Length: 139
Image 1 (tube, rainbow, N blue to C red):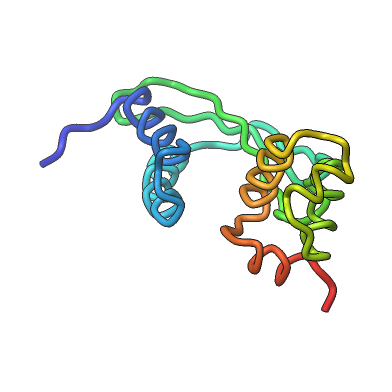
Image 2: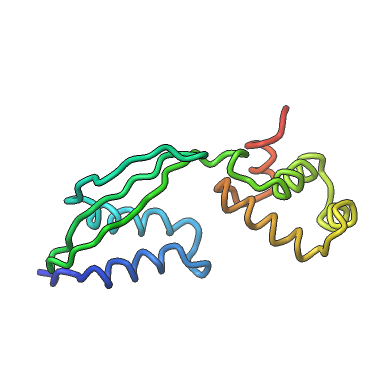
């Protein structure tokens, strides 16, 4: 039988699931059982509406009786969560422009555009330009 994990061990595992080195396809499946285990016995302390979703604060304890309070925010990943700059870059991507063209039009470095594209992909949970166009761009 496995020994119970401490809160710090569970949180460390959760952090590793969300790390940039973790493969995109394994992050959610790896994190889900940990989150269920962590939040399974929690009680709700507060719920509030935020601009792009709902925030809730939970209180609980791990198997080793270490108490914790955690705040979670649930939001629908869509264009509303993108910054103004990211929305502009996404619009140019929908037009089929290259990163160099977008950088020239926006007056920033191509590396800035690369970074913004990575953030757009992360926020919208897509992994290619084709998926982004299918998700965001009008037909």
